[in-house]
Length: 86
Image 1: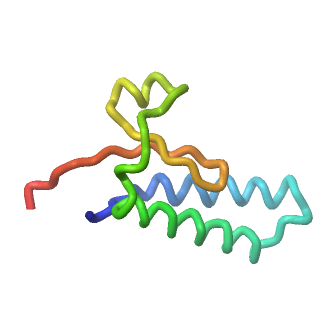
Image 2: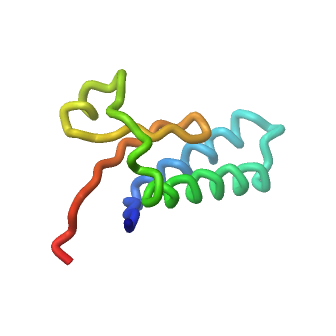
Image 3: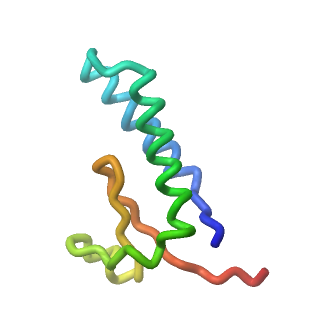
């Protein structure tokens, strides 16, 4: 299964870590890059493990839209399965 990640996800993760670096002087770019890589690798693995995830327990908007909940590195991601015409 193919995983499509919107650019907004990458921008949000990057902006979060840029603010985190400013607020936490002991956090360095090397650590941030490792965390980002783990996040992106985990997101890509959704294509193989999507069936393991449940509907979100707390976010009613996500429940109403039929999303599933994926948590990695304390980030919550909403995703849904779609069948493409191709």
